[in-house]
Image (cartoon, rainbow, N blue to C red):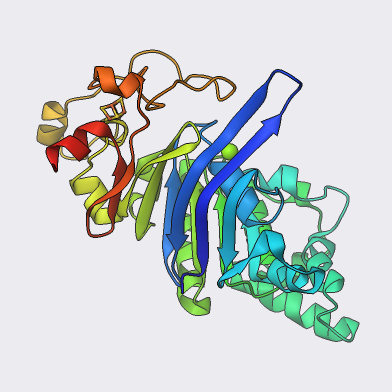
Length: 321
Ligand code: SF4
Ligand code: MG
């Protein structure tokens, strides 16, 4: 049984009588226990909406989210309470997600107090001390406020808070993209160490493929509310099938100068279309260098082209026929 199963998920936001943002338009994938699943796409592709729907923050317009086999949007209040402990989130901007008027002790204590984890103040203090140590912060600084910490340290506070309830899965929504490059690697290493120590599962959301390459066991590439391609990290980077994935990969500089000279950048024409009025047929057809007549009319089917390697594209389907 997968830890998370997302089935034909749709999420539409109704702006007014005439306008609907189609943030998600039929997304399916699974996350297995202990893996890191990287979810990648340009801003506005719906990747954060996937994260928030799995968290239970948004009810789906259609489709299901199962956690440990249970449909979370059909769950009882009691089941919801248990689930809230199983899934936690880390955000892109730890400063915006941490209450500036609370000490880091209070920030980390909040979920523990809501769920009445500790019977007395002493147990709570010891737990918070050990959480701070685990993320590389000094427990003696627990009385300080978020603004007294650097960006990287604040992200460590966010991670400590996410760990407090001993979740099974952490949804990390661009957790390092707001940090200095020198700090990014430290946070990635911390997340990897915590994963090993605590057998955590991650949904790691990012806007570029380079960032998730070394972190992820499997990667899903999203475009305009749909999944374009999904494969193991190795398979996706060595044998990308979808023209959008190929374009994203071609944008990543190669460290070897000789290879870098030979790198052929695939440039996408035009702008990302609006999710209010997404293109008919294949949503990528307005920018796809390989688009055919059929792409403007027919939605390509989401198909498994090799074991565990899925993509939605008319050309690949044709090649396999
Ligand atoms: Fe490009 Fe057509 Fe494939 Fe869409 S279905 S990615 S437009 S070739
Ligand atoms: Mg986002």
